Amino acid sequence: MANGKNSKNHNNHSEENKLEPKITRFKSNRERVKTLVSNFKKDDRVLILIWADPDAMASALAMKRLIRHRVSEVTIAHINEIRRVNNVAMMQLLKIPLVKLRQIKPAEYNKKILLDSQPSHHPEFLKFQYDIVIDHHPLTTGWEAPFVDIRPEYGATSSILSEYLRTLKIKPSVALATALIYGIKTDTNNFEKECTIQDVLCFQYLFKRMNRHLLHKIEASDIRRSELKYFRRAFEEIKVRKNRLLAHIGRVPNPDILVVIADFFNHVHEIGWVFISGEYKDRLVVIIRCDGYRKDAGKLATRVFGSLGFAGGHREKARAEVPLENLGQSGHNFSTRSLVRLLERHFRK
Ligand SMILES: [Mn+2]
View 1 (cartoon, rainbow, N blue to C red):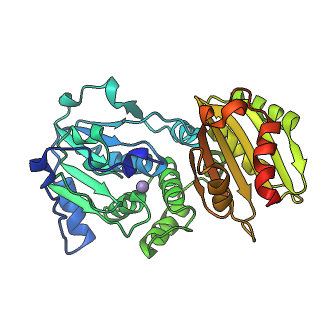
View 2: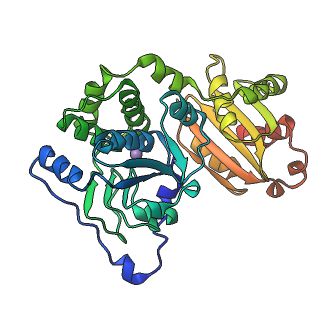
């Protein structure tokens, strides 16, 4: 997800770092949403800024719905490249009107809203003064805004925006309800991650209005047509050693396809471990899958690749990224055989 969210405050001006956002407290949702909409006038031109992931895109669509009749224009701009195929599918199938921030002139907008992020999450966000910031990540400092609604206990910003819609008795369209459901599902990892009863209630409220066929198509769309050829290469390359399946795919335009291929082979009943590697830029990327039962992919990744580059993950899923130059001779002409050799050594122990 948003890489920027992991980065620390990029603003080095100590004076500005002292800024602390004040979260406005309200007696009721009704009062809160009234205050929110009272910020807008008929001739306002509003810019909504996001790091385009499902939760942020859905939240922006909901915000647009909340204010579109109260202002003269609402534009949603994103600062990141949208690469994940599911996110491209969401944008296209639900017709989410997005523009890249660098394609517009932010100065032409007199009101700015930041959703599902805080200004300190990314240097691009820090360039602007916001009228409204709504987010569910832990509260950061180094910024201020007149209207701040930060609820770290919520699983998704989409849930917060759903509450706003509900309070104003706005019935979301099918596209909006589907977007918000997908936003909540993605950020809570289908309610497996931390979330509150509010997220569940929002889900229930939106569920009757969404279209499950659209949702399924968005969730299923994780491969580009142009990437099907990597499956052929995977089938040509696979080597099975005991219960371990290994394949080196070679050069890939995007390491995400390695994840999809690894997840696919993890469906095979007789296979306990899957190792799919590929070359992306000047690195070897290895995706590891196992059932997690008496196995630990994260530990194995660290043991094999920890000294060579980045390695980490959980019991069932892990990933390693190693600069090819750190692999010595085999880095020049890495193959499935090299992958087998690299791992066999560790399984023999
Ligand atoms: Mn989020």
